[in-house]
Length: 373
Image 1 (cartoon, rainbow, N blue to C red):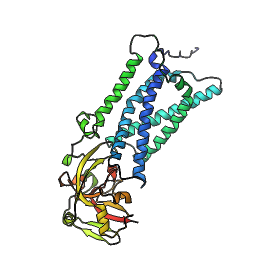
Image 2: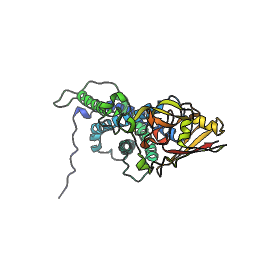
Image 3: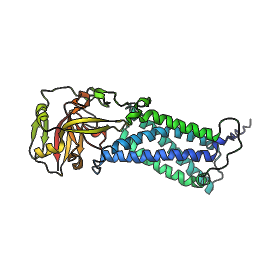
């Protein structure tokens, strides 16, 4: 029996036109660019000391944009894939030629781009709900994937540049057919992106909090009206008022009970807590300036601080405050939140709060400060 090759599918819908792919690709590219740049900034915040302490809410804005742009990119990626998937059924040029080589490079770049971008968006979304069903470290993998995406995207744009230039400007649409028009598709895709954006951005924009039905955190929900990522129970911390002391290791070693800290000069600061999952909220904190504590132990003004927590396990049981943060008048060893003693889940008896810092570096349950030269 002689088998005949299956006929190539015919995709005549104007919704699969290159112009549609270019328009949606522009939207997706803008979302990916914002997500990439803000993600790199977040990585720099956690990996280096070359970050300013002002503006106070810079990290709150950048990380909010990071999660928002990543969330919006999900429906845009799905729409882009739907628009161009007929190309996957096209026969590659044969016999081997320069055109065939270009086609192979194009398809490989698309394979890498789609696979890494899909994995990046999926793991990023699961991170916002703090679910990690994989054996690899999220942050390092997320960062590495971002650079792979950029490389694959550059190759893809280089290969498709002539087609992109050709269809960048608006062209006359194909004759109207029954069903959805190109303009209708654009409206649906833009509406889907806007919908997921509006229903998640409220986790970092309090006035839109009531609309944040898809956000894992909402402003005002949590102990003392502030959300919590890691509870004291999850961190293995129990309340032990009589045993707790703050130790400061520096030129002079000091030790304070909680009552002794309360008798030191107190400072109030209105600062946001901004987490890598994208949520943020402002609050009023009260405590002792870190720079005052450093001065008491005789530390130099150029000194940084290593902060140690009572937290058992996890990646953030310690953090470091570079000098620009340790000497900032708004950086506190906070004892109170919104007019009351810290809740245990918010770091009682003491925690760090500093301007323009990721929430994971605002160490809770502090019991030791070590001066760094």
